[in-house]
Length: 291
Image (cartoon, rainbow, N blue to C red; front, side, top):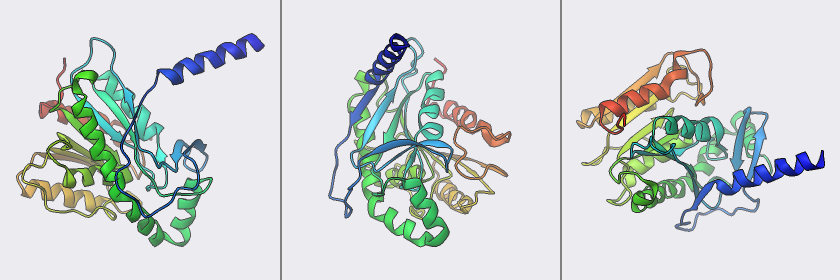
């Protein structure tokens, strides 16, 4: 038994050490203080693996198999109301699917609202008793989360050769709060940090309202569900319309059912295949090749 346990621990150690984790700059001085360490755990409330109390942003690199690389990259920003990150169904599972299509993926851990031991329990309690406070606390951190996203694009572009990607094929995909980070990156980029395409998924429009697109705003593809219980469908429609009216390439799938936070979960609904619709759009826009 001891030998089996040791072998398992050795295997786990190899797996962890094989991960490529990139530390990003911690720009600015957020008006918050993190007193609890970054924590990863399984949330029974969300039925998902989560990370809380991110104060130092990072990228985890997911590379496609040798010989399948298309040269396209996607930065993936999980959601969680800026109180947590849903790192599996809106993170690693997305990255692994993209890898199967020859796309290099980078899962972003951006800075979050400081919480206690269980950030998921905190945001759920606030949702029931003081929902306005969620937006207030998220608003303090969101500008720095967006900067983390922009720094991620800048890092990937500067190291394109290292990752085997094309510097003009770097996309940004985000879910819910991660979608707000995605849209914020689409409004605040510089030449070095401009994403080449944006994919906001049931994006949190309340904390990142729709603005006028830039003259060189990148193509965008949106996903949402009409029955989103947070009422996010109108925000996605408004964002789509703003791109359309500006003459920018844009597509959207608004599912009649899907709810919120579906990510890579299977619900037996058409929204289960949203990522395939994204892939079809990316091919049509020549953002990804079939290799």
